[in-house]
Image (cartoon, rainbow, N blue to C red; front, top):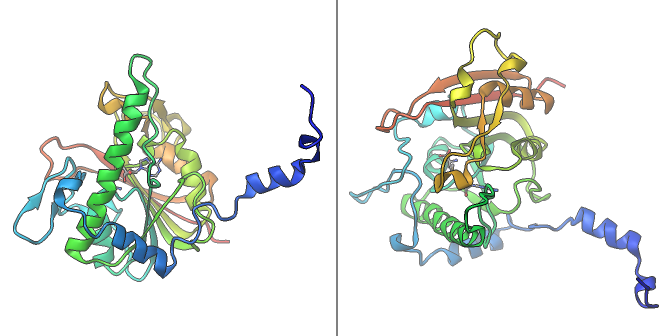
Length: 291
Ligand SMILES: C[S@@+](CC[C@H](N)C(=O)[O-])C[C@H]1O[C@@H](n2cnc3c(N)ncnc32)[C@H](O)[C@@H]1O
C-alpha cells in the first residue's frame, strides 16, 4: 500500500499516545450539573419503563417484584460490613435495592453501571442470533437503569450514579473506602480485570458476593487452597446463559484479591431466605494489606 503525502504527515506517536490515555473517557460525571442532568433525564420514568431485578417495597403500598428478593438479607449479602460514613462504589446496582440500603446506613454512595446505549457482555452461542440478543440486551439494560432511578425517586435516597466501562472506569471519580461487586462478576467476560480496575481505586475493603456453584464444594483441600480456586466457563442453557459467563469459587475470588493487594479475607456462605428457589450465595470481604 502506498502512503499519500497527507498520510505520511500523521504524527503517529501523538495519535497512539492520545488513544491510549484518553484521559477524559466518561469524565465529568460526578459534577453537580451532570448528576442533575441524569436526574432530569430520568424524571419522567414511569413503572412501565422499568424492569425490576430486585423485589422492592417502594413505600406506596405495592411491592415491585423482581427475580431477586434480598429483603431482610442485606447485611449478610454485604458481608456484614459497616458502610456508615464510608465512600462506597457499587458496581452493577441493578434496581437499587442494595443502593437504598447502603444509603440508609449513611454510605456516601456512587453506583456504577453500563453506559447509555450499552448492553451486557454476551456469551457467544453459535446457534443464537447474537445481533438480536445484543439489541434486546441493550433494551433490558435501559429498562434496568430506569428502575434504579425510579427506585431512587420513590425512596428518595442520596447517591450519585456514573456510567462507563467497568474495565476502564473514569479517572476523575476519586478514591473509595469500599467497593461492592454484588452478583456481577459472573456476568463479565473478564472478572479479574474488573476487580483490578476498581481495587486500584479502593483504600480499604472489597466486598464480592456471587452465586455458589456446584464446583465450589470440592472437599479435601485446605482453606484458600489453590485446588479450590475455580473459575469455570459454564454458561447455563439459553436464554439466561447468554449472560452467565463463569462459575467462580470463593477461593478463586480470594486468590484474585490477594494478588491485588487485599489478602485479608473472610468468606461466608448464605441463602436469601425470602427466595423460594433458595440460591446459595457466598460473600468475600477482603481488606487491603497494611502498607
Ligand atoms: C445481576 S445484577 C446485580 C445486582 C446487584 N448488584 C445485586 O447484587 O443484587 C448485575 C448488574 O451488573 C450490571 N452489569 C452487567 N454487565 C456489566 C458491565 N459489563 N459493566 C458494568 N455493569 C454491568 C448490570 O447492569 C446490573 O446492574
